[in-house]
Image (cartoon, rainbow, N blue to C red; front, side, top):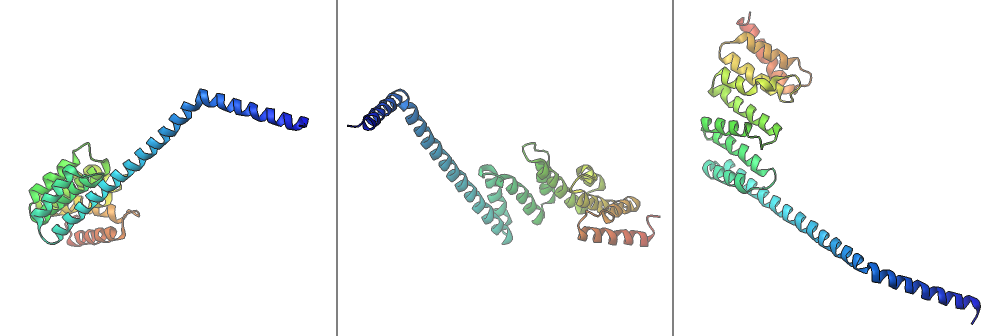
Length: 221
């Protein structure tokens, strides 16, 4: 046997001995790590499956409730939406809550609808953007079914220049002011909407039309 062969064999045996020693000392760590990876992976896969299944189930229930509403089966739709509010997953409980209030309004239960929107608007568990939308929805109902002060109480804070809902809030407040015989206040609000370059075009067009109507009537002078 040559010296090189002898050295290689010795080196190989040394590496094997070292590997065996390392395994004897740290092998359980490698096994434990592998087990943890498997368990964590299984947990993540299981959680994703569960959340997807829950979301799909809630989505199906929401679609079915909307179908009932579109068929005019309002009481059944409200019952289905209220059930989804209780046991739905993700954003569906909040969506169901607002949609149920909308169905109440569509069937003519205005007071109940306003109360439902007001309840959502004051519920701290509901995201802030949704609370603002609920305030606005209640105010829009009260334009035709309430007083200026009731509309103002809900949307005055939404008319600030930095609020993304300001255009519709100002329009609602302007309509309420005009309806209650406050043309000067209404004109100021409609002019704000018409002059706001960030307002949607249809909102600016409606505001311009209302402003022209008020000026033409001479009531705001």
